[in-house]
Length: 323
Image 1 (cartoon, helix red, strand yellow):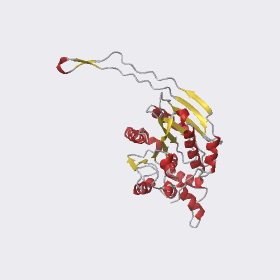
Image 2 (cartoon, rainbow, N blue to C red):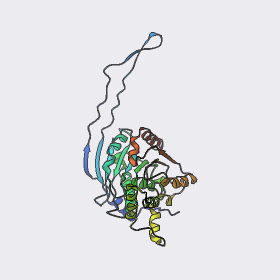
Image 3 (cartoon, helix red, strand yellow):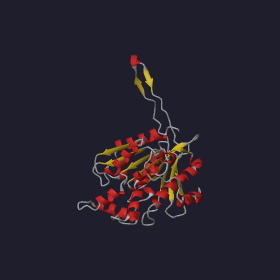
Image 4 (cartoon, helix red, strand yellow):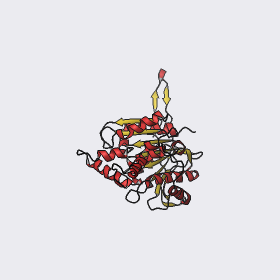
């Protein structure tokens, strides 16, 4: 298997030139604690009265700022964090979906704020879309955003050994790529991918079927634009590009643990990930896949309460234990 062991020149340049200068900032007010009107008195065993104590927990103030992690206009990232009074905290990097054609970091705003309440610093980067730059610009940007977080970990009080990346759809493919490209386990502690397009070639083929949905047909066009060519017999250059976009190409024993979710009836089915999961398990890497009922795609899966609990419990189990 081919493995990329060093940052690309584009990533290295972005890493070297980025500075901790916010492009935009917003500070949210401290959440007021909820205090019961009075202690509750209940009859206990033997007619005694038990008094329930009220415990008040005040979270640190939520901060949100937008930073440039590279020189390009699209290379910006929203940071959400509540600086702990002491020590460091784990972090989550969120990668948005949108066929590599569209979408932006703002789609993660509500999820990011919820995750900060669970003790995580959260970072949601934009990345160059395929209309601006073809593959591997998207992978380069994901790497550069992660490198920025690590470079400025002291400011955000982040433990760089406890970073999980979570991606949706096209962002799920990028998240999975961060877990497999090079030494994934040295880059991130774990990966969560929701409806990841882990087999772009399958997306290309399915989108060409006579019965293909509009979403599947759009995915086919998006894959062609991403790699900048049409995979035809004998065109080895294009096949190599298609292979380079598939995370399974880089699977190895030093990859990060992964949790993958697909809906049973969505246009990016579980078949996109079964080969990767099987390969990772064969290499001894922790790889879990859940197929949830329905046709909801990508980040929409988190709207299911059971799926949300599964995801955050998995992240907690991976990231809240110090190395």
